[in-house]
Amino acid sequence: MINSKIKKCLFPAAGYGTRFLPATKAIPKEMLPVLTKPLLQYGVEEAIAAGCDTMAIVTGRGKRAIEDHFDRSYELENQIDGTSKEVLMDGIRGIVNGYTFSYTRQVEMKGLGHAILTGQTLIGNEPFAVILADDLCDNSNDTVLTQMTKLYEKYPDKCIVAIEEIPKEFTNKYGVIAGELIEDNLYKVTDMVEKPEPQDAPSNLAIIGRYILIPEIFDVIKETKPGKGGEIQITDALLTLAKQGKVLGFQFEGTRFDCGSVDGFVEATNYFYNKEVK
Ligand code: UTP
Image (cartoon, rainbow, N blue to C red; front, side, top):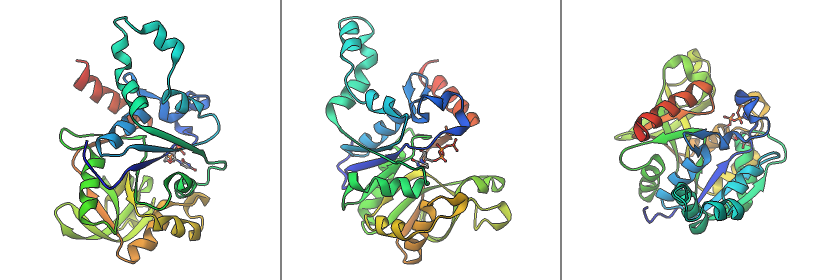
């Protein structure tokens, strides 16, 4: 764990997860497990490793399993205490006992930008991290968010978005940036477009689900009109700040799995199985 200025991490987790129906009819997408751990717990562990002590979670209807997971379960714990299975609860017990979880509900799913604005009540007026738990990241050295919080120490008045090179034919699944390289793996963002068709994409550098945001973003989101798909897009809000030179794109070290898609979820499962079980 590092001593970072970023203490709060926001987890937008209100989406419907339609690509995983029927599994996500009653189970939140963020609670689907890779091996034995829910996606959201991986995200929380990454935030803790980066120095965050407060997890601010934006939920919605049908997402109560998230709150129950990050709480005690007296009956179950009583049953397994003193047995060989107790060790399986060590990780989650340490998280529940050591960190603060706060929740708010997004009543209408009006997009990621809107979900982040809904979280303002939990964040207040300070810089914060955002993790989209369905982008599962792994790295043998610093976690992706730790790399970003370290970078933020050097650029405390900027937003930082994690970016990754993708095959050009997939640009219509991501926010895509244009930028000027200012140091190794770091771009000053000059343009960003939500889900452009390959011929319209300004580059093949896609934004993935890790952000460090300055509190100014909330006022900008309030002024941002619905964009692609009629949703309030965080990419559109960040573009306003990018035009003022306030957004950096960071090409992180590590592997990312798009666990919001079935292909990515299966890849992640195989990867962690080979790494941790075999
Ligand atoms: P996605 O578009 O990947 O999630 O949003 P989704 O809408 O749940 O998935 P599909 O496409 O229907 O399968 C990225 C992240 O933003 C959150 C989602 O929960 C996910 O973590 N989100 C999205 C919200 O919290 N609120 C929204 O209105 C939209």
